Every structure is written in structure tokens, then in C-alpha cells.
Length: 419
Image (cartoon, helix red, strand yellow):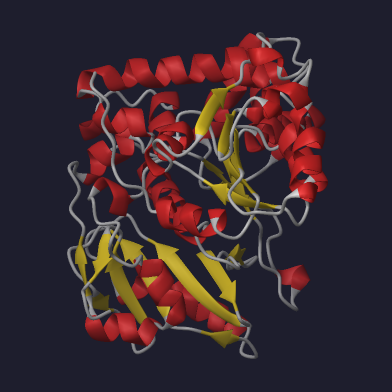
């Protein structure tokens, strides 16, 4: 397959960080396009070295000083977790020369080496999180400002000026079934199940083995599939463990492995000042809807809307869009979910500058005022909070006013030019 590339929203932020920090670390799961992004952004301007868990590439682990001496900067060190011995030498070199943009490191694990990077290069390094394609990227609309950024700046302005749909190359069901990993975007439809099977096996057989002491890898594979199938639900470690016959402690540890390799994300519960009345469990989300569909044995895109997990899959996709958008903001808004003991809930609460932005997700093309009941309950529960206009994100065709305070918006919205 010839190389194909879509411009990434992260390119502008990468350029900005390289102008301000001596080192930048690009993190993210396997196959999200870290190396491809850097190859395009730094084409001809940097040396590239890709490390391996087995081979000591250019003796970097044995003699890090000599390795660095033989490479010019900017220097890209791809999958640096396989060469941790380089970090002290990089630190010493940066301490002697604080010029920006010298070292660009990538990694697909949050534990171990990347934690050491944050500690040993504190004040010298910035982090850029990369995930699979966003909807704006698949629609090749990265020149537009993201709707979420504009919304948390001023919902009123967005409502006043409006949005249109991005309309990428795939319809909703196929988009969720394919997932958002770059390779899955370009593969023919019939190759997608084989891609996700290979991705899961590679993850189990390579990445997780490097992190975990797991006695039964077949059982861990079942755990990964089960976690993917439980996406967009509150996390119950005991229940997950019982499903496959492991202790809650083991389930907790295995979820930690998924989080450490960017395969699983959790959204904490918001409690405010009424802790006893509010559910306290975090909601868990698999990183990619394609892997979730594969784990649920959904055979075709047309089978997505009739599956019991359809709503959870759509919520997972919307959370992915939110996560990708806020990863490019500094500082990032805090994200919570909220659910009261009597069942009222808000899928996502973004908090910035003391204001809360409630977002509800509905997998229906015609959202109604009733879909804002959770947002209304949140306002009544916390009258002392500063709460912005509510937003219902749905697969609808246009922006729809639902009440005096709440609006529905297409999940693939793009701001109109004046927004």
C-alpha cells in the first residue's frame, strides 16, 4: 500500500512546543501515527532512530554518550522506552544547552521510561498526546477551529453563528466499526476484522508482555476483550474480575496495564458538595471503537445500530473526539461524569475557569428536550455552580435548540467561518 497521510491537528501544537522546549515527548498507543506525524513535520530536518526491545540499536543502551555524540539535533528517538539509559545523558546535554527543539522522543507506555522522562527532564520537556484520527482530520478540515474549543470559550457565540457537518468519507456506522486508527482508515472494508485481530494479538504478545507479570496470557486476552465490550460504563473491578475468574486486585492491575499503554481511559465522577448522593465510580472507555466492535464480534457496519452496545459505542466515539480536542489545549479542561443515586446523569462535565460545561450524548438523529433532563437535574442539584449552556451531541443533521439553556449539535460538527 502506498504511503498515505492526512494532516493532523497536533502539527501546530508540536511546532509550538518545539519552539519553546529543549525536548518534546510524543506519547500514544501503538499505530496512532506518532512516527508518521514526526516524519512529515520534521522531514529532512532531523535524524531519526527507532529503538527495539531486543536489539541495542547503535549501542545506545551500552554507550549512550557515544550514541548521542554521533547524531545531530534535532534528533527523533522513536519508542524511547526501549533505551532508558539515554535519559541521563540527554538531561546533561540539555543542561549545557537549553536551545529549544533538540530532542523529540516518542513512547507507547505511560509507565517506566516515560514516567522517568517526566521526572528527570522536569522543566526541560513538554508532552504531546496523540491518538487516532479525529473527525476533523478524516474530513480534512484541520484548518477549522474545533467546535469544542469554541464551545468552552463561548457557547453563545457558537449557537449564534452555527455549525455544519464535516461529512468525512465514511457514514456513522462504518466510522465506528472501522475505528479511528490511521491504518484502519485506509484499509479496504473486508480487511478491517483482520487488522483488529492483528492489533490485539500484537498488543498482547508484545506491549503488554513488556509491562506485566501475567501467568495466563489467554486469560489476559479475554480480559482485554471484556474491557472493550464494557466501554462507556461505570468501572466495577469486582464484576470484571468475576466475569473471567480473577480477583478484583488482578482486574485493577490489568486495567492499569491497559491505561499505561493508552488502550483504556477513565472519567472520574463529579461529587461537588453532596458526596453521599452521588455515584463515585469512574466511567471507563476503550480507546478505539473499532477494537470494541471487534471485541463484541460485530461483523459488519450494518450490524452496529441493532447491537445492544450501539449507544455505548457512540458515546465512546464522542468521548474520543472530546479527548482529542482537549489534548491540544493548555491548560486542559477537567473532565468528569455525573450520576445521582436516583439515576439522573450527565455523560460529561468539562470544567474550566470555574465554569461547568455539561455535555450529554444521545445516539439518536432527533434529540428532544427530554434528552436534557440530566443536565436540568445537575443544575438543580448544584445551584451555586456556574453552569454554561448544555449541549447534546447526537448524529443529527443540524444544530437544534432544545430549551432556553440547551442545544443539540451534530457529532461531526465543523464551525461555520464566522464562529
